[in-house]
Length: 171
Length: 256
Picture 1 (cartoon, rainbow over the protein chains, first blue to last red):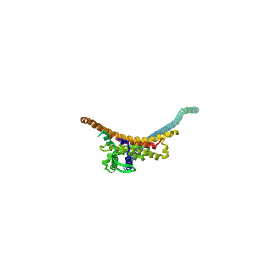
Picture 2: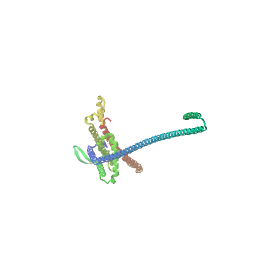
Picture 3: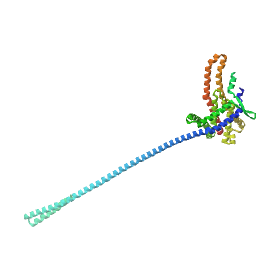
Picture 4: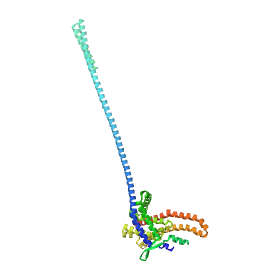
């Protein structure tokens, strides 16, 4: 049992040789390929993760673009609508204006025509009255009134007629 | 035959033949050396099998080995050594698998546990000792490494005290490594033997008592055996590797 804690130098030498040989052999035969494999797998995994991330980002970007486009379209439609409304109002206004002007014109024309008719009527009346009074004067003359009376009568009548005309023109 | 001779027979090395001498030292071919070579042979053939063997047969073994390798790389070596750890990775992997296979071989009836020999564990920890200082010098340069042996900002008058303490620390660290592995390996074997020895001790009193205690003894020794196989053996290989990584990491990054 005393040998238990007494290291044997020969075995130590062999252990060094064996262990270091194992380190070198296994480094070449085992660890290099296995570590390479693990590294490659990790790189692949990382790549896949990154590409997935990128895809996600792309999707997000497209979504954003779509949203901005949508909002643009919305604002455009809004502005178009507003413009159309404005235009409609303008057209309405012009139509109303022209209609108003036309109506006024028609009214004016009517009034003018009415005045013309009135004047014509008045002229006609004056003529008629003149002829009637001439007729009356003739009739009076025929009733053998002397010349003087006749004259005077005619003068009076003409004066009256003048007054009447004056009154009439006041209307 | 008493218990002591049985234990000695099981635990101590058996020299077969002296191969040759270096000076006065006989380089003996012994049972533990044979076990070590068998372990090396098994390891090399395992990796050859992984490389050459059919994909179907080696797939599961490959996955297992890769998982262990990745674990040692990501959980043990790289956290302790930082990104410089990749240069030393093959050393730690070999250390782990070598100790593991030696430990496992020790559990085969009739075989012997090479890591249960103080010469083997002492040599492994000596390799660790060399690696610690080589890595430290390689990483920092010789003079800065010597300066970093004692912590920074120490008063000068403390140096004569601290330098021997730190140097002693290096020695005890590696010494503890070798003793830990050696004792753990031996203890399991001794306990298994002790439980089996109980049968014969009771049998010497009375064959019937020995026979009646046999099932209990066998059950207990089996329990210890599986405890060794499943927990102690991988754990000790892991601890040896883990502590080596910590020490090397401390030598590479002195301020940690």
